[in-house]
Image 1 (tube, one colour):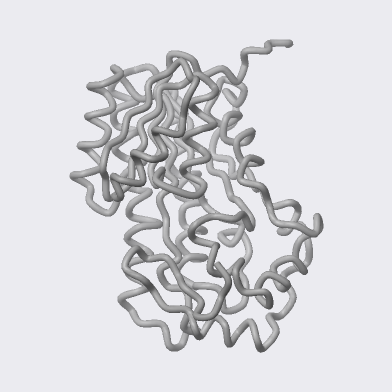
Image 2 (spheres, one colour):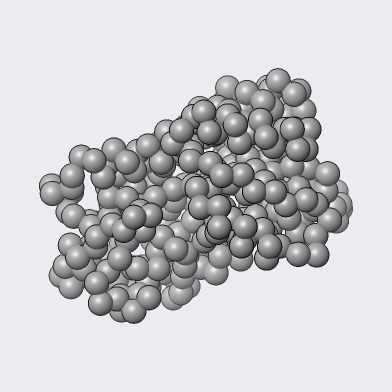
Length: 291
C-alpha cells in the first residue's frame, strides 16, 4: 500500500490538553499542520491565546478553551464545546501533567504533593479518556485517544518523583484497559512515552549542569530529544496509518529504556533534588540554576 495521504487529518477535529506550553503546544502545531481542526485546552488562557496565534498558514480552525483536567465537569464542558464547534471529536490528546512531587526524597514527600500529582496525571487522564470515549462511542464514528505518559512509567529512576513515575505507569495500563474495552466499537486508545525532552516541566532540571550531565549519561544518542521528534509518532497514532494499532505504548526516548538502567545519581544530583521547590503553577525551580 502506497498512500501519501495516510497521515492527513483534514476535516478531523483534535483536542489537546496541556496545550498552553511545552510538548502540548508542539502537539497542537503538528496536528494543525496535518490539516486538523484543533481545540487547545489548558488553565492559562493567556498562554493558550499565544500558542493559537502562533499557528498560522493552516487550513483547519484553531480554538481555545480553558479547562482544568482535575475537574470532571470542566472536562465535559470542554468536549461538549468541541462538539458544538466542529460536530464531533476524532482525536483526543491527553497531555496535561505535572511533576508536582519533585524535590523531597520519597521518605520525606508530603502526602499533599503525591495526591496532587495523582489528581492531574491519573484522574485527569481518566476524566478525559472517559469523556472523549463516551462521545466518540455515541457519535458512532470511532476515534483515536492518545495518552502522553513517560519512559519513567516503564522503568523507575532513583530519587525522581515517585508519584510522577507511578502515575505514568498507571496510565500505560489504563491505556491497555480502555483499548481492550472499546476496540470493537472503533475507538482506539494508545500512548506515547517520551524520554527526556526540553519543556516547561523539565527546564529546571536541564538548567542544572550536574543534573544535565547525569541525564546525558543515560542517552545512547548522547543527547536529549527535540520536541519536533514527537510529531511523527503523534500523527501516526492520530491517523489511519495506525488503524490496527491499539493498546500500544510507543516509547520515544532515543533508546534510553533499552539499556540496563540509569546509573546511580551522583551525590550532587541528589542534593539538587532536595533543593527543588514548587511555584504557584506546579513547575519546579532549582535555586541557582541557569534557566
